Image (cartoon, helix red, strand yellow):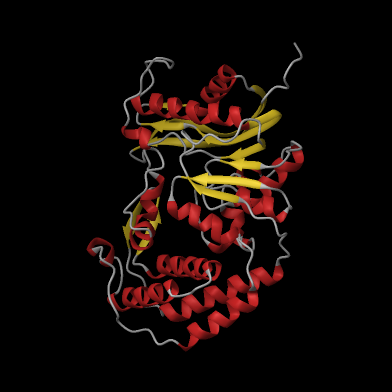
Length: 368
């Protein structure tokens, strides 16, 4: 049975109130309850793969259910957040480290090298962030270090004089905030989340990798739950270039290098825009890898949105179904979660596009 609130479940919004899931807000994602519904409704088997894992909603939900899972994402930020949210922690050790951090008095000990990013902060705030960043690097336990760094990354986005709108950062001066108070408060809340949540010992495998070229062992995956980048001109990581630049040494990480690639045009309608042809060619590469990795009878659930262009719309779900069937998948179901208005220049209606769930199955092998 399809949930009445399916339109909300394919967004990250419900995760705002979910323990651990809400450690880092990532608007390009779906909800914990969506993953739970998929697993139950379609009787999915482990291990579960999410080849566009984002900040780990599929992986953390699988862990909470005691299921094995594997995830990868091309963004080092996303892969890091996924790992930090799904590890096992010693809360006593975390509290001990927090006490040590509470004694620290932040001072100016250096600066982040990126001058463009420095302009997005009050100088004192960024000096404090750099101070705590260096102190976090001194933590010997890798898991504690990752949790504290995630707390600092979240704090950084809160104090920066920017807001994330669409696919870009917009400067917006905020009231002065205390970095130490925010950081310690975030860490305390994270520790409390861990205490309130009885997590199984199981931990997902997480890699920083590209879904188009990463091939897993044949017949090794029980199911797939994922949401690839949607067909549009937005480079998703642009809104995270601040975090990428400060903490990962990258101004941005292209989730979709195909935007700049020239498509071959051999297998897709030439009337499609170049960006769409390249998108579907890349998705075919990824889906072939999924078909290879899935066990016979395994299902792939894909959340995808249509493409909105200045003079046309493209329904990605139908195109991906065609690709899947060409590869060998069987379509079990297409569920329209919601329809989104497509506008040009924010004033002229071009049409509507669907945000859909595609449920594909790798057929059982037939006896010769």
